Image (cartoon, rainbow, N blue to C red; front, side, top):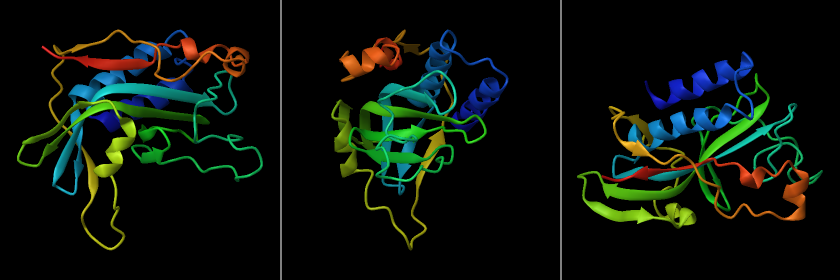
Length: 200
């Protein structure tokens, strides 16, 4: 099953009421497996970016799960910016912490994304350039210069997902600290929504 179908399945499960604070971590782990082991980002046919650690961010606009860390949500900057439209599924969202692969839902009224926290970069001939980098914002060196008048594109490429490859059980998200603001927001910093490849 490809990554986009995983996102579609998540949306359908959410609409059916199957996604809640008890079930969401396992859903995220399943999606993380597809991102980490099931494909890569192809940059203009020149570079391949493989995610090694993924952090999830999830915010219900009308529900009870409120994630103050989410950049792309209603009210993030008060009245300074208008209500942002929902990103199309499988969009790349560049922000101050790096790059997200988004899977928001206007139907479900939620914002959802997977932040690439750790990654490796290869040339198209599979020559390794960067191995297990953890500086998220350094991805700007490769995911940048989006052409407006060219057929060159940045694409997600699905590959055969090896279900035997190991994935971490989940850990706390990086740099999401336990200040008073977060304590008031249901202690979201305690959510173990970060998953990493376990290399053989």
